[in-house]
Each structure stands twice: as structure tokens, then as C-alpha cells.
Amino acid sequence: MAAQLDLLVSIGDLIELPHRGDRKGRQIYLGPPSFVEKALGRYLLLGVRPNGAPLVNESLGAGIQHEGHTRSLKLDAQLAPARLGAAGLHEIPLDHWLKRPRTDQAAAVVTVMRQRLDGAGESGEVGGLKIIDTAASVLYYRGRWRQLASSDSGDFVARRSQAYGADLWCFVRVEHGVPRGAGGSSS
Picture (cartoon, rainbow, N blue to C red):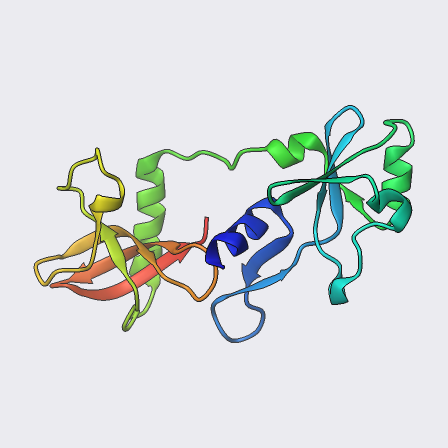
């Protein structure tokens, strides 16, 4: 179930966003009905309509091809944007869809995260927290993640579990094996 949920979030059928209101956390919402032109006349369909309503009408829906967890549609390139727009789908430009996140220098990211930790209050108990063990072999990535030990002190790259989706990345300050401050994102 978690793997399928991750696939739906990664493609854009579902969107994980910060919780609105006083509570911190994240919630999953239906992705807006959208399309991306993958190649001339080939369109990737994204999003979900509420209450199980079809993403497109029957005349378009008959041509949907399922490829794993994705849906594609072949249409005449001249008519497709108007037909998909009339069906209530929003176009996402290919360059926007393929755009990579900005890159930052590692030292700058660490500096910003340490500043955030300096200004944050106590984190309290952080369930499911694992840190990356810099002393472990880099040849086995999964083997580098471990629980906190009483000898751990300092700032660590960490992951923490959440109810749905992949573990969240975070940067945590630890004193003698106890988290004192944590900040992070779900990237």
C-alpha cells in the first residue's frame, strides 16, 4: 500500500502539502486534473477528480493507455490542448514538469539548517528517527541508517517516519543520544 501511495504522489495524482492551520504536519490531497505533452501528440494525464469522477469524458477516456501507474493519451497535436482544456485539465509545460530543484552548495545548506536549529525550540521525542552513520561503509546505503546511540552528540542528517509516504528528511541536533532540535522537509 505504501509503495502505491508513493507512486501516486511521485507522479502527481496525489499531492503532499503542509497542514493548514495551527497543527504542524503534512496532508495528502487530490492532484488537480492536468496534462503534460510528453511528445508530439502524446500526453501524460495527471490528477484525480473527487468522488471517483472520470478524469476525462468518455470520448477521450477510450484512448487512455495505462503504463504502470501512469496514464497517457494519444491525440491530434493540433486539437489536443483545446480538447483537454475543455475537459477541465490544466496544461503543465514540459520544461516546468522536467525542471530540477535548485542546487545549493552543501556547506550553505548545512549553515542554513544549523541556523534553523539554533532558533528552534526543543523537539521532544521524535518517533522513528534514524540517522546516517558516517562511519559505516558507503557501499551499502541502507546499512548506513541506524537508531540513535547514547554516544551520539552533534548535528545529523536524519529520516523520520510518517503515517503515509516516504520517511521525511530532517536535520537533527542530538545530545548524548537524545534529540534536542529537529527541522526538515519532505523533499
